Image (cartoon, rainbow, N blue to C red; front, side, top):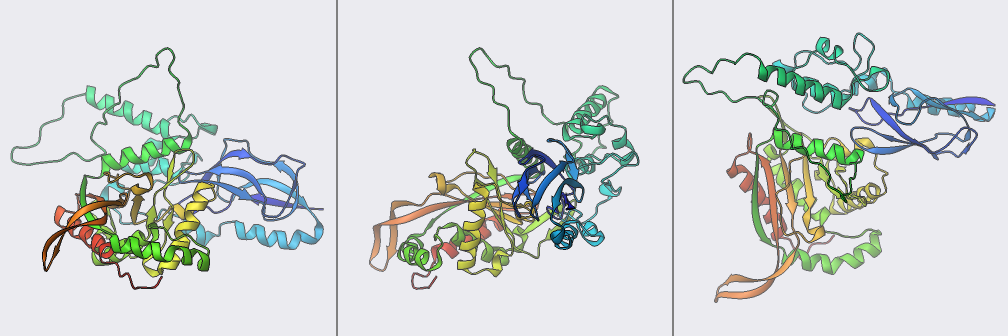
Length: 445
C-alpha cells in the first residue's frame, strides 16, 4: 500500500487560502475517485474538495474551521501500489507551481497608486499569514506591514481576522476624533475627504425584546453585507430607467422555445438574450466596462458579465460568463443554464465568480418591475431587467395614433457617477434597450 497526499487545490487567481468548514469523511472511510471529502469556504464562494484517487482515508491534518493555505496537505489516503505513479502525477497537478503562485496575485485594479506604494505581503516578518481580504482592507486604510504586525489577532495562532482589523480601525479613528483639532483647509481650496479617512456611521444598537427570534447571519450573508455596504461607501450611485417595447422579442421566444429545448436540451430564457444585448452595448460604450483605481480608469479588454443568482437559502451569488461577446446565443444559453444550476446546487468553482466587468440582475424573475440595483465592485455599472407586462400603449402610425396591447418592460441601470455622467449612462442604457426592442422576429436561434 502506498500513501497519497491530498492538498488544498488552486481555487482562483486571487485566492491564497480557504477555510475547511466540514469534513465529509472520517479516517477509515473508503473514498472513490472524485468523491468529495471536505467542504471549504473562501472569501468568494463555498466549494468541495474531491479526492483525485481511490483509496482509504488515513488521516485528517486539519480541524473544521481551520484556515489552510493553497498547496498545503490536508489529508492522506492509503492507495494500491499500482496506482501510486498515477496518483503522484495527479498530486503534482494540484500543487501550485512557482509560476502559478506568481500569477496568483489579485488581478483587479492592477494600476499602482502612491497610497498603495507599500506592498502588504501574505506573510509578515513574524510568520503570521494575512488573508487577501485583510490585506485589501489594510491597503485601503493605509496600514503598513509594521503597523499590521502589531495588531492582536483572535484567530488560530494569533491570525488576524477581518473583525480584528475593523475593530482596530474603529479604535484608531476614535483616538483621532478625541485628539487635537485638525486645522481647517486654507481659504479658497476645496477638498473632499477620501473614503478611507471619513468616519463610518455606526448603526444603532438594537436589543431583542421578549418573544423575538434572533437569527445569526450565516457566512455568505455576512459577505453580502460587507460587499454591499462597501459598494455604497465607494461609488456615487446614480440610477437611470427606461421603458421598452419587447413584443417582438416575446413573440420570437414563444415561437422558438419548445423547438430549442427539444433540439439543444436547453431552456431558452430571456437571460441569455439580455446578456447578448449588454455585451453588444459594452462594445459601443467601453467606459461602462471599466474600473476605477485612484485617478486612473482601467478599460477592461474582456467583457465578462456576471448574472446575479438567488440561492435556495435566500442568499445571492454572481457567477460570471467570461468573454460573453464571443459567444453565440446558443453558447450564452448553455452558459447561463449551467452556471445557474450549479449555483443553486453549490457546485460553482471560486474562479467562476471572479473577474466580472459588468453585472445583470434579472428582477423580473420575482415579478419586480424595476429597482435601483447596487453596483458590484470593482465594476462601475449594473443593469436590472424588470418583469415583462402587457400594457395598452399608444402607437404612432401613418393613419394616426392608435392603442395596442404590447409587451413592455423597464430597464434600470445603476452606474458610478465618479466616471459615468448621466449623458453616457443614458445613451448606453438606451442602446441596450434598442437591441432588445428592435429584435428581428425572422432570425434563427
